[in-house]
Amino acid sequence: MTGHPDENVIGPTANEFRDALGHFATGITVITAMDDEGPVGLAANSFTSVSLDPPLVLFCPAKTSSSWPRIERANSFAVNILDDAQEEVCRVFATPGEDRFSKVAWHLSPSGSPLLDDVHAFLDCVLHEVHDGGDHWIVVGRVIDLGIEADAGPLLYYRGQYGRLGE
Ligand SMILES: Cc1cc2nc3c(=O)[nH]c(=O)nc-3n(C[C@H](O)[C@H](O)[C@H](O)COP(=O)(O)O)c2cc1C
Image (cartoon, rainbow, N blue to C red):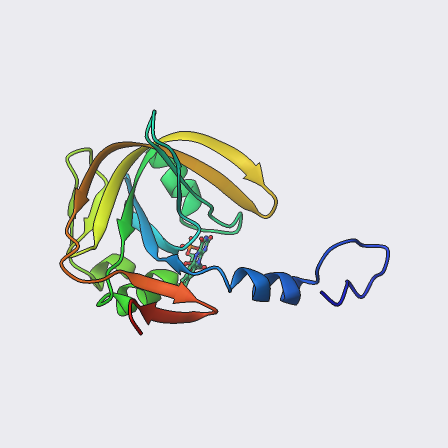
């Protein structure tokens, strides 16, 4: 660490922090929900498991996310875990201004959240708790249903690049 340009501030610079975090390899999810305006969703790699009993998971939407207020109103959401053929799906759900759900095939889960077709696995959740996380929210969901397809490999994300297992 080279230190913050303002020596009164303890901690890394934003660039150092981003670069270090990029060294943590993740999968990629698309978080989806349905409100009275229709389906909504965004790409997120901040997903992780939290608790086995009860079954809890979390993701962190930026406080600037336009999808998050609608997901919060819906009070439930689905975690779509992308497979290694779905890089383009990730791009669609990470691009502002896209008509995202016109670009992908999807259907409704029994609880009413949109599920993207052909994902690696999905978790259907009800909103459990929302915590403050700096410039993001920490959103905890309780898993009420799930499905595993996994006939391909997972889509990975590492140092700003998409990757596949074995590459
Ligand atoms: C691989 C990848 C991971 C991302 N992870 C997150 C995330 O965890 N939280 C987040 O708020 N945005 C994340 N983003 C950015 C959002 O997908 C992007 O800003 C999107 O346009 C937000 O849409 P919204 O404003 O409709 O919520 C990620 C983007 C990519 C490409």
